[in-house]
Amino acid sequence: MCQLMPQAGVMSTDVPNLTLVRSDEVMPSSKPIIYEPCIYIVIQGKKVAALGSDDYIYDGLNYLVLSVPLPLECQVLEASVEKPYLAVKVDINTEMLNELIEESTANLKKADDSPVKKGIFVSRLGDNIRATLERILSYVDQPASAKVLGAMAIKELLFHVLAGAQGHYLRAFAYRDKQSFQIAAVINFIQSHYTESIEVADLASRANMSQSSFHHYFKAVTSSSPIQYIKTIRLHAARRNMLYDNKSAGDAAYHVGYSSPSQFSREYRRLFGVSPSIDMQLSTIDV
Image (cartoon, rainbow, N blue to C red):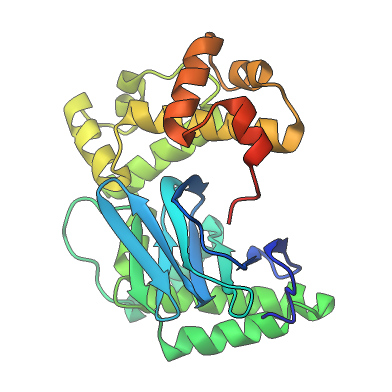
C-alpha cells in the first residue's frame, strides 16, 4: 500500500466507497472526529477510537465497523516514517447492505434477541477479508477495473463482515421491526436536518417510542444523549465549513443553527480543546 500512497494523507480512489489513509507519526492525543457508517481496516500500525467510556482498538488483527454515524475520539497509536500507519476505509452503502442481507439471510448467523445494538464494534480480521482486501487494493491503480471489479470486491468484503462473528450487530440496523433500525432512522434524520430546530419529543415520535424509551435506546446505540449528539454533529459540521469552505466562525455557526456566537465558541472549545480561530491554524485533514 505504500506504493499506492507514498505520502501521508487521505486519498479517495476509483474503487467505489474506498479511501486510503496513511500517517507517518503517532498522534500525541486523541482527536474528535465523526465517522460515517464504514468498515475501517488497519493494514499496518494501531489506532484507538473512544466512544463514551469504551475504547475500541483496531490494528492488523482487528477491524472496526460503524453501523451509524458516530462522534468518536480517535488516536493513531503506532506510526513512523519507516513503518507508517496504513489503513483503508470502506463506506457502507445502505442499498448494497440491504440487498446482501436479503440475498444471504439463510446463510447468515441468526441475530440474538437483545433489543438494541451499539452502533460500533471491533471484530477479528479473518483470512477471507484479508484476501478480498488484497484484490481490492490491486484495482486501485487500474481505473477501469476499479469501477467494476473493485465494486464487486467491495460487495464481497461487506458479505464477509455480515457473515462474521459479529455481523449481526450490523444487520440489526437493517431490520425495520428492530429498535436499532428505528434509532438509525432518527440518526439519519438528524444528519439531514441538524441545521434546523430539532425537538427530542419529535425525534421520539419519529422513532415511535416514548421519550424515556427513546433516550434509553438512543444512548445505547450512540453512548450520547440526543441533545449532545445533535450538538456534536453541528460543531463538526461547522468545523468542516471553516476548514474546507473557508467560512468565518460566525458564518459557520449560523449555518449549522447557532444564534449565539459566544455559545458556539464556548461549546466549540469544549469539544475540540481550542477556539475556532486557533483550530483553523492548527488543523490537518482527519484520518
